[in-house]
Length: 256
Image (cartoon, rainbow, N blue to C red):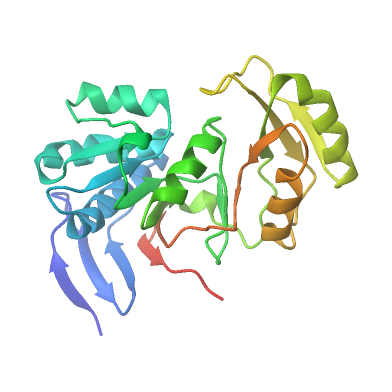
Protein backbone atom coordinates (compact mmCIF):
# COMPACT_ATOMS: atom_id res chain seq x y z
CA UNK A 1 0.00 0.00 0.00
CA UNK A 2 1.35 3.44 -0.93
CA UNK A 3 1.08 6.63 1.08
CA UNK A 4 1.91 10.07 -0.24
CA UNK A 5 3.76 11.86 2.56
CA UNK A 6 5.08 15.15 1.17
CA UNK A 7 5.93 17.17 -1.91
CA UNK A 8 9.69 17.22 -2.44
CA UNK A 9 10.01 19.07 -5.72
CA UNK A 10 8.10 21.89 -7.36
CA UNK A 11 8.38 20.21 -10.75
CA UNK A 12 5.35 18.43 -12.15
CA UNK A 13 4.85 14.79 -11.16
CA UNK A 14 7.57 14.84 -8.46
CA UNK A 15 6.48 13.52 -5.08
CA UNK A 16 7.60 11.12 -2.35
CA UNK A 17 5.71 7.92 -1.65
CA UNK A 18 6.42 5.32 1.01
CA UNK A 19 6.24 1.58 0.37
CA UNK A 20 7.13 -0.47 3.45
CA UNK A 21 10.85 0.25 4.04
CA UNK A 22 11.56 1.53 0.55
CA UNK A 23 11.16 5.20 -0.28
CA UNK A 24 10.64 6.15 -3.90
CA UNK A 25 10.30 9.53 -5.53
CA UNK A 26 8.00 9.22 -8.52
CA UNK A 27 8.78 11.50 -11.40
CA UNK A 28 8.51 11.92 -15.11
CA UNK A 29 12.25 11.44 -15.59
CA UNK A 30 15.63 12.58 -14.33
CA UNK A 31 17.42 14.32 -17.18
CA UNK A 32 21.02 13.71 -16.17
CA UNK A 33 23.32 12.41 -13.48
CA UNK A 34 23.49 15.78 -11.77
CA UNK A 35 19.73 15.71 -11.22
CA UNK A 36 20.09 12.22 -9.74
CA UNK A 37 22.70 13.53 -7.31
CA UNK A 38 20.55 16.51 -6.36
CA UNK A 39 17.55 14.28 -5.74
CA UNK A 40 19.39 11.73 -3.61
CA UNK A 41 21.08 14.50 -1.62
CA UNK A 42 17.67 16.02 -0.88
CA UNK A 43 16.38 12.65 0.31
CA UNK A 44 19.37 12.42 2.65
CA UNK A 45 18.76 15.94 3.97
CA UNK A 46 15.16 15.03 4.80
CA UNK A 47 16.35 11.88 6.56
CA UNK A 48 19.06 13.65 8.54
CA UNK A 49 16.73 16.43 9.69
CA UNK A 50 14.63 13.77 11.43
CA UNK A 51 17.70 12.46 13.28
CA UNK A 52 19.42 15.58 14.56
CA UNK A 53 19.02 17.79 17.60
CA UNK A 54 20.23 21.38 18.16
CA UNK A 55 23.46 20.01 19.73
CA UNK A 56 24.13 17.41 17.01
CA UNK A 57 27.35 17.11 15.04
CA UNK A 58 26.85 16.09 11.38
CA UNK A 59 29.65 14.31 9.54
CA UNK A 60 30.15 15.40 5.93
CA UNK A 61 31.82 13.33 3.24
CA UNK A 62 33.73 14.21 0.11
CA UNK A 63 32.83 14.32 -3.56
CA UNK A 64 30.24 15.71 -5.93
CA UNK A 65 27.24 14.04 -4.27
CA UNK A 66 28.42 15.12 -0.82
CA UNK A 67 28.75 18.66 -2.21
CA UNK A 68 25.09 18.54 -3.23
CA UNK A 69 24.22 17.49 0.32
CA UNK A 70 26.21 20.41 1.74
CA UNK A 71 24.42 22.91 -0.48
CA UNK A 72 20.99 21.51 0.35
CA UNK A 73 21.45 21.26 4.11
CA UNK A 74 22.91 24.76 4.35
CA UNK A 75 19.48 26.44 4.79
CA UNK A 76 18.95 24.19 7.84
CA UNK A 77 22.27 24.96 9.55
CA UNK A 78 20.46 26.45 12.54
CA UNK A 79 19.02 23.01 13.35
CA UNK A 80 22.36 21.45 14.36
CA UNK A 81 25.46 22.59 16.22
CA UNK A 82 28.27 21.98 13.73
CA UNK A 83 29.88 19.57 11.29
CA UNK A 84 33.05 17.56 10.90
CA UNK A 85 34.44 17.18 7.40
CA UNK A 86 36.32 14.28 5.82
CA UNK A 87 38.43 16.54 3.58
CA UNK A 88 39.78 20.05 3.35
CA UNK A 89 37.65 20.59 0.25
CA UNK A 90 34.43 19.76 2.05
CA UNK A 91 35.46 21.90 5.01
CA UNK A 92 35.96 24.89 2.73
CA UNK A 93 32.58 24.37 1.08
CA UNK A 94 30.89 24.20 4.48
CA UNK A 95 32.61 27.40 5.58
CA UNK A 96 31.43 29.14 2.41
CA UNK A 97 27.91 28.46 3.69
CA UNK A 98 28.88 29.78 7.15
CA UNK A 99 28.42 26.31 8.63
CA UNK A 100 30.61 25.62 11.65
CA UNK A 101 33.30 22.97 11.08
CA UNK A 102 34.88 21.30 14.12
CA UNK A 103 38.01 19.20 14.33
CA UNK A 104 37.06 15.59 14.96
CA UNK A 105 39.31 15.41 18.03
CA UNK A 106 37.18 18.08 19.73
CA UNK A 107 33.92 16.12 19.56
CA UNK A 108 32.90 12.96 21.37
CA UNK A 109 30.07 11.93 19.06
CA UNK A 110 28.94 12.36 15.47
CA UNK A 111 25.20 11.85 15.16
CA UNK A 112 25.18 10.93 11.49
CA UNK A 113 27.71 10.83 8.67
CA UNK A 114 26.64 11.37 5.05
CA UNK A 115 28.88 10.47 2.13
CA UNK A 116 28.86 9.03 -1.36
CA UNK A 117 30.49 5.90 -2.77
CA UNK A 118 32.23 4.70 -5.90
CA UNK A 119 30.61 1.27 -5.61
CA UNK A 120 28.01 -0.30 -3.30
CA UNK A 121 26.64 -3.83 -3.07
CA UNK A 122 23.44 -5.16 -1.45
CA UNK A 123 25.25 -5.65 1.88
CA UNK A 124 26.05 -1.92 1.69
CA UNK A 125 29.74 -2.74 1.58
CA UNK A 126 31.40 0.06 -0.33
CA UNK A 127 34.39 1.03 -2.39
CA UNK A 128 35.37 4.62 -1.66
CA UNK A 129 38.37 6.83 -2.23
CA UNK A 130 37.98 8.09 -5.78
CA UNK A 131 38.47 11.56 -4.32
CA UNK A 132 41.53 10.42 -2.31
CA UNK A 133 39.84 11.14 1.05
CA UNK A 134 39.34 7.51 2.09
CA UNK A 135 41.34 7.62 5.34
CA UNK A 136 39.55 10.60 6.82
CA UNK A 137 36.24 9.24 5.54
CA UNK A 138 36.89 5.95 7.31
CA UNK A 139 37.84 7.74 10.54
CA UNK A 140 34.65 9.82 10.59
CA UNK A 141 32.64 6.71 9.77
CA UNK A 142 34.17 4.96 12.78
CA UNK A 143 33.05 7.77 15.09
CA UNK A 144 29.55 8.26 13.65
CA UNK A 145 26.48 6.69 15.20
CA UNK A 146 25.02 6.16 11.73
CA UNK A 147 26.53 6.14 8.24
CA UNK A 148 24.18 7.25 5.47
CA UNK A 149 25.46 6.57 1.96
CA UNK A 150 24.07 8.47 -1.03
CA UNK A 151 24.73 7.62 -4.67
CA UNK A 152 23.20 7.30 -8.11
CA UNK A 153 22.31 3.97 -9.68
CA UNK A 154 25.57 3.71 -11.64
CA UNK A 155 27.34 2.90 -8.33
CA UNK A 156 25.12 -0.11 -7.47
CA UNK A 157 26.77 -3.48 -8.19
CA UNK A 158 26.31 -7.10 -7.20
CA UNK A 159 30.06 -7.61 -6.72
CA UNK A 160 32.62 -4.96 -5.79
CA UNK A 161 35.88 -4.48 -7.63
CA UNK A 162 35.24 -3.08 -11.10
CA UNK A 163 36.07 0.35 -9.76
CA UNK A 164 39.83 0.32 -8.99
CA UNK A 165 40.33 -0.03 -5.25
CA UNK A 166 42.16 2.98 -3.77
CA UNK A 167 44.86 2.29 -1.20
CA UNK A 168 46.50 5.14 0.74
CA UNK A 169 50.19 4.48 1.35
CA UNK A 170 53.15 6.12 3.09
CA UNK A 171 55.30 7.55 0.24
CA UNK A 172 58.44 5.54 1.02
CA UNK A 173 56.40 2.30 1.02
CA UNK A 174 54.84 2.76 -2.41
CA UNK A 175 56.87 0.12 -4.25
CA UNK A 176 56.74 -2.39 -1.40
CA UNK A 177 52.99 -2.05 -1.07
CA UNK A 178 52.61 -2.44 -4.83
CA UNK A 179 54.49 -5.74 -4.80
CA UNK A 180 52.37 -7.05 -1.93
CA UNK A 181 49.16 -6.08 -3.72
CA UNK A 182 50.29 -8.09 -6.75
CA UNK A 183 50.64 -11.13 -4.45
CA UNK A 184 46.98 -10.66 -3.52
CA UNK A 185 45.99 -10.78 -7.20
CA UNK A 186 45.77 -7.06 -7.82
CA UNK A 187 47.18 -4.86 -10.56
CA UNK A 188 48.37 -1.73 -8.73
CA UNK A 189 48.71 1.63 -10.47
CA UNK A 190 50.16 4.68 -8.73
CA UNK A 191 47.77 7.65 -9.01
CA UNK A 192 50.27 10.15 -10.34
CA UNK A 193 50.33 13.76 -9.06
CA UNK A 194 47.87 13.04 -6.23
CA UNK A 195 48.78 13.71 -2.61
CA UNK A 196 46.16 13.14 0.09
CA UNK A 197 45.26 15.65 2.80
CA UNK A 198 47.46 13.49 5.03
CA UNK A 199 50.50 13.89 2.76
CA UNK A 200 50.37 10.33 1.43
CA UNK A 201 50.03 8.66 -1.97
CA UNK A 202 47.23 6.66 -3.59
CA UNK A 203 47.61 3.32 -5.36
CA UNK A 204 44.58 2.23 -7.41
CA UNK A 205 44.29 -1.55 -7.58
CA UNK A 206 42.68 -3.13 -10.65
CA UNK A 207 41.76 -6.78 -11.29
CA UNK A 208 40.16 -7.60 -7.93
CA UNK A 209 36.71 -8.00 -9.47
CA UNK A 210 34.71 -9.88 -8.40
CA UNK A 211 35.67 -9.40 -4.75
CA UNK A 212 34.50 -12.45 -2.80
CA UNK A 213 34.84 -11.52 0.86
CA UNK A 214 35.22 -7.76 1.06
CA UNK A 215 35.86 -7.96 4.81
CA UNK A 216 38.72 -10.42 4.36
CA UNK A 217 40.33 -8.38 1.59
CA UNK A 218 40.01 -5.17 3.60
CA UNK A 219 41.83 -6.80 6.50
CA UNK A 220 44.56 -8.33 4.32
CA UNK A 221 45.40 -5.05 2.61
CA UNK A 222 45.41 -3.11 5.87
CA UNK A 223 47.96 -5.57 7.27
CA UNK A 224 50.53 -4.66 4.61
CA UNK A 225 53.28 -2.55 6.16
CA UNK A 226 53.11 0.96 4.73
CA UNK A 227 49.37 0.93 4.05
CA UNK A 228 47.44 3.63 5.86
CA UNK A 229 44.07 2.17 4.87
CA UNK A 230 42.19 1.00 1.80
CA UNK A 231 38.93 2.05 0.20
CA UNK A 232 36.88 -1.01 1.17
CA UNK A 233 34.20 -0.09 3.70
CA UNK A 234 33.12 -3.63 4.54
CA UNK A 235 34.09 -4.17 8.17
CA UNK A 236 31.91 -1.14 8.92
CA UNK A 237 29.52 -0.77 5.96
CA UNK A 238 26.83 1.84 5.50
CA UNK A 239 23.80 1.60 7.78
CA UNK A 240 21.39 2.89 5.15
CA UNK A 241 21.72 3.92 1.52
CA UNK A 242 19.69 6.26 -0.65
CA UNK A 243 20.09 5.32 -4.30
CA UNK A 244 18.91 7.58 -7.11
CA UNK A 245 17.53 5.70 -10.10
CA UNK A 246 15.70 6.76 -13.23
CA UNK A 247 12.53 5.49 -11.52
CA UNK A 248 13.09 7.38 -8.27
CA UNK A 249 14.93 7.25 -4.96
CA UNK A 250 15.24 3.85 -3.30
CA UNK A 251 16.19 3.46 0.35
CA UNK A 252 18.25 0.33 1.02
CA UNK A 253 19.14 -1.43 4.25
CA UNK A 254 21.96 -4.02 4.23
CA UNK A 255 20.94 -7.57 3.38
CA UNK A 256 22.48 -10.47 5.36
